[in-house]
Structure formats: structure tokens, C-alpha cells
Image (cartoon, rainbow, N blue to C red; front, side):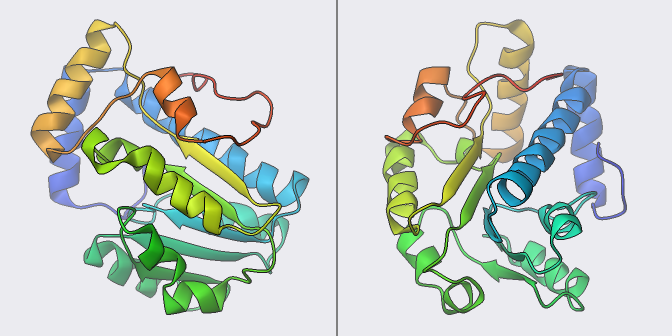
Length: 219
């Protein structure tokens, strides 16, 4: 839905079925990518963050986090983390000539394993602020797995002055949302839509940057 070559036949097949069921999805996908670009630009250009940890990064696509960040400052260090070994192998190939960006295997359900990962520890300076990005990944964490506790563990491990970005699908009373939820549960098995208040709770006591927690434009 974002274009590019880094996708597989099974993904294209599911994408076509999703669009047939909920035609508005491509606009939402593009909005998600746009807000991730905006968050990345804010972190690097406005907040002065020079190291980013992207959890649940997925396969490389157009305008990845490292591309957006390193257009502003080529020295910005980026760690992509994903629990799919195929994603990590593919990212290694794509990033072979970019020493400022690495990809590692890890799982959001193991925050201690993420923050203690030797490659993550070595690539990022844990005495300096870090931008933690969780775009479209927390919706795959079920309520009984303690998503708020998982994010709290990650936040507590971040150096002072760090930032957290979360993008999540909302549970709203809308027929299109209900169809999308039904399809995603069938396709992925692990999908948890949440209310705005539930998503807000994932930030713990962090102060929100303007405009705060809001629906994505165009989604």
C-alpha cells in the first residue's frame, strides 16, 4: 500500500483482501507512515535527538526512519528491532553500507532483553537521550500480556531527556473499524484495538508533546 519492492506475495494478497473489505485502509496506512515521518523529524530536527530505537520496525519500505532522520543529520544512530528473523535478515542486507543504522532481533514482550541486548547497548549511548518509536506494534500485544507494564519497563530504562512515540489503532464505534478488526484478527490472530484512554495509559505519566494524543489526519 506504500509502494516499493520490499514486500512479499502473501502480503500483497492480504493487502488486496483488506482493501476489498475496507477501502479506506490505504489512506490510513499512508497516514501512519506520514505521522511516523513527522515524529522522526520532530525528534531529530526539533528535539535534537540523535539516536532512535524503532521497535516492531517491520520490513523496510519507502522513507524509513533512518532515511528521514539521516537526511537531517547523517550521524543519527538508528536501531531497528523486530521479532521476525526474516525482517532482520532483510534489513541487514539493506543496511550493509550504513554503519549508523543496525537491525536486531528482539521482542516487545521482553523489554529487559531489548535494553540489555549487546548490539543495542553498543550502538546507542545510554547516557544520552533516545527516541523510542513504537508505531503499529502495541496493537499486537494482548491486554493479558500487560502492554502498559511493558512500555513502562522500556520508559524506565531510557536516559533522561528521552522521547516516546506510539501509534495505535483505536477501538471506536464504527462499522469500518469493526470490519477491519475482524479481518486483522483472522489474518494475524493477535490484534488488540484500544480506546483513546487505554492508549493514553501506555504513556504512563509522561508529558505529551503538542498536539498530544490525537487521531491521525487522513486516517
